[in-house]
Structure formats: C-alpha cells, structure tokens
Amino acid sequence: MDALSVTPDTPATPDVQALLGRHFALMRSQSPAESCHVMEPETLLEAGATLYAARNGDGDEVLGVGALTVIAPGHGELKSMHTAAEARGRGVARAILAALLEAARQKGLDRVSLETGSAEVFAPARALYAAHGFEECPPFGAYTLDPLSVFMTRTL
Image 1: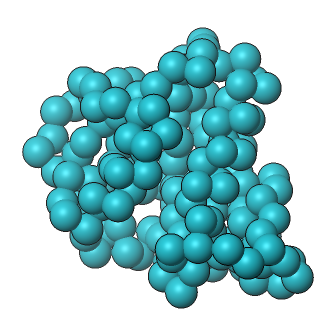
Image 2: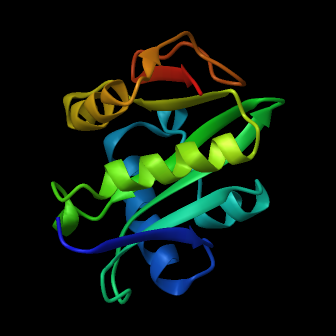
C-alpha cells in the first residue's frame, strides 16, 4: 500500500464532502429509499459524528471516509464507510476501520454496530467487518428487519 494517513476530518471539508456525496449517490442507486440508511454529509454533522478521512501520502487526495456516531450509552455505530473506487484494494477501508475502532475505545464505547447491504455488491464490506470481529446481529437502535440489510456488531 502507498503511504496513507487517516486523520479526523469534517464532512464540511470540500473534498471530503465530495466523496461523501459520491457515497450517498452510490448507496441510493443500490437500494430503494426505504432500505437505504446512508446519511447525507450535513446530517453527519448534525448527528455529531466523528469522521475520519484517509488521504494519500501527500495529503492532497481523499481516498476514503468513515464515521462513528454514538447511538446509546456505550454503543456506537459506523456510518458512511466508503473507499473511492479508484483506491479500492489498497487497504484504505482497513485503515479507516482501525481508526474508527480506536476512536470508539477513546470515547469509552464497549460496542460498535453497523448496517450494510445484503446484496452481493456489499460482500467485500461484510467480509472486511467479519475479518475485524464483527458478527451478524439483529437490528439495533431504530432499525427494523429488512431483507436488504445486514446488521453486524462487535464488542471492544
């Protein structure tokens, strides 16, 4: 993998906002609205999300993003995990996931959960999460059973 830095950022940073916009459009194209739980960049800000951006070694290109929200005492949720198509297969998602899990520990969370898609296009994401200790679980928070969703969780 090329040099990579993963640091806290904000959805208001223009290039981060652009990548989040690409993520939003892609997710909306993959699932019907009632089964699509992607958050708009502005909503991430309103939810008080902790967002990390992965950049190339020069820092001039955003390669991926991921966010963490606190949904209950001791319980966080991963949101908006996305690697730019042109950066996939370079360890970007692993690096972002590691940063988010460390941020969750620093916040004193003892559980982190996520919702992702059940379609084949989401298989690499599900494999990444499983490789990092996430296991399938029932819906959490405000989610309900949905055949287009897979819910996963892990303790810290």
